[in-house]
Image (cartoon, rainbow, N blue to C red; front, side):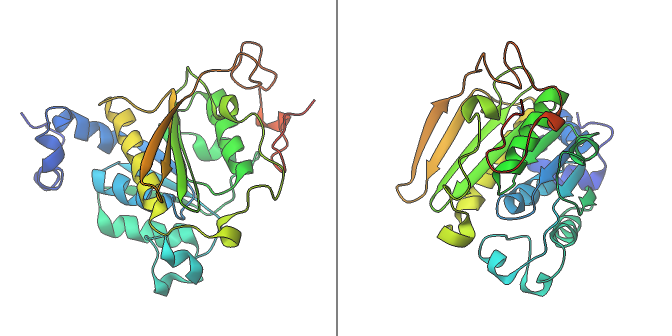
Length: 271
């Protein structure tokens, strides 16, 4: 029987979810009750926002302090030419509202920093790290791990992408990469370029992981990382194991606050 809190329009809109045995009306109701924060409204954030909004995630927060540039439009598909110069959170929020009026959008036009991350993440059930820089990735990891908030990590580079999910009782991003590479060792897409459709694939996987986590359907990538090569059209899987010496989630952690970390250069843990 349909869940009593789904109205006729929702039963129509989400009918392809509702008729699935694995999801059904209860799964759709769980999505409508959920709150997800998307960090970054760019290449990865665009497909994440599209699919989470279409799926009916009830509250979606968008954190970004950048404005739309014309060079973004080759891959950041929630923005259009008329949005050039607008804050990305405003453009992305407008896109989400037009796609699905069920969704409450919470735009946060701010940079995610050690001073802002706690307030930004508070109240959300899941975080999608769709950022494009190492300091933000480590900051999201450290805060979410310490606060017990599950999150999805995604990253892209030229033809390559990687995706994983971190729960509250397994490995964290620092178990994979204890510190960021030295500045300049991994150039950004403004220097090396990026295949425009690449973030669509990686972001869609992140959105899939989010929906699975929120509904309890299937197995997430917790404990695994998928590496995608668009040029060769290959997917490889890497096992992600907890590191006993990890300063954030290890057996004897040395970090109990993001204030312990310098989120620049190598994102190193302070002495």
